[in-house]
Image (cartoon, rainbow, N blue to C red; front, side):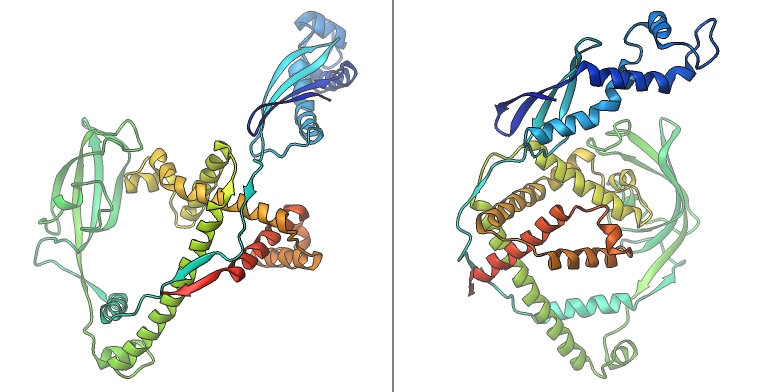
Length: 427
């Protein structure tokens, strides 16, 4: 199968792969048997025309595409395995020659997992800073509690103001024609939230319940829908309701009604305790981040660009999945935020690079230090995943290879080792 393996660049190989005429002939025969019922030849009933007759009528290569497709996946997979390559993206494959007497010849360009080195990760020095809890922070947290216990009242004796919630109908028009995604009824919008494109919310301020009016705005130049980017549009608005949020006073009665405490002082003391715990947790996270940054700095190696792109793709897919649980899709999210897919990808880029580098560094640490997962640890991890997704552990094994899960467990153990060996100084 594998004819030759040539390294053309760092982390890039070119494979020449051949399928023998005998194997190709079997694939062509199977293609004929699969397709013959769909081919009509004068003088033969459907499905009864001999292969030779069909090839004479339509050309010798009539079944080649089907035959090549049938052997493609397994052939490339076996060749990559024979070449002992670990790929980080599907190979780019082209058929360089095909025929009855020569079989099939492929050329596959493969991007491989990089060979990296990592320095000594034992004894990394970091500083731990626990920020003190201030009275302002306590008041801010209690302010959120008051907001959560606020009530919304309808206002009909004044015009809309920033901070109000308004219920509106809107429909957008460009050059007098409505455009897709520009219409909604009984939509609740908080004025001043900057949820819509610039200028939209500001033009609702000053209007009263029952008003019908136009809003004139222009979409941003970098708007994701190119047909609307930079375009001036008109939104026709009907204002149904104005709602004011009333926030309760902070006193002992409020505390008794909304918490398990009796006084404001008791509440503040409890809030302070929780904020101090959060500050400690945040400091621990900062320490972990600093350790990881140091690990990444010790990594040496040329990393293929496609690994970063793949990680960005994963992050966007994860975002889309989370949005779906909120009843949104990615396009709607981009529309509301005024982002483009390109700007979203750029937002994730730095984080993706760090994640890719850290994973490579930790895997190399695992290899260098002989860190391994035991069978019991792997089984326990299968069990945890099964519980998370409400499925038997044996079913999880159908989707996650033991080798892959074992590496994940080993990487987690490596993290614990590196953190345990770190030298942490308190600020």
